[in-house]
Length: 255
Image 1: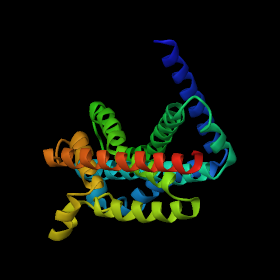
Image 2: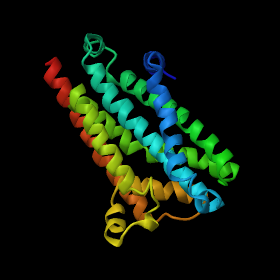
Image 3: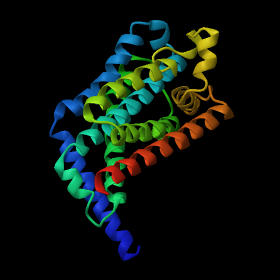
Image 4: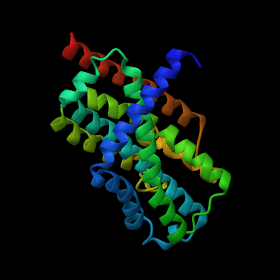
């Protein structure tokens, strides 16, 4: 490892530590991310014993809400969190330092990934205790990796929101994006329950692509090559929007 690479790594870890501490100082932010997906599973799945009592369907349902947990964490952590940071004088000071944007963005990615994993814990525990979901160890590990990959476009969506909008605008926009995408992607109700037109439309959403890939990893069925194309395409598109928003904000505030 070169001296510059070691320096970047240390700065990235320092930013990660700072952002984790900054988040946990507001416990409700962490608790909300942990509790809400488990509550959604309780409301939508547990009362339906034909789903909760079937191993395949229960595993599929837990996978869907796992993606919702990661998706909501990414959109709110990066969208609202970045917008709040931009409103603070300390953020403007950090962005004038010679370290560059990589450690700051790297810290955001690591802290967001950590809180995404934390958000899965209550959901997985509830799924194991209250349903018949029973993925193998390999499926569980693969599912955790897949859900993080499937959350990538929402990570970039959060960054685009955070760098493009003020705090007052970021929160409602994050909510408007989160719930329609979650419902349309089959995270609350399985796509098999959709009417034909909605099922067709849903196939072009990143939530549906991520959901189908995740279900495939955890149950062995449900994905096509088209899902991979859709997820990669959305990731590239939203990443470009995030980069554009960052550069625009950088040029407007620090020129």
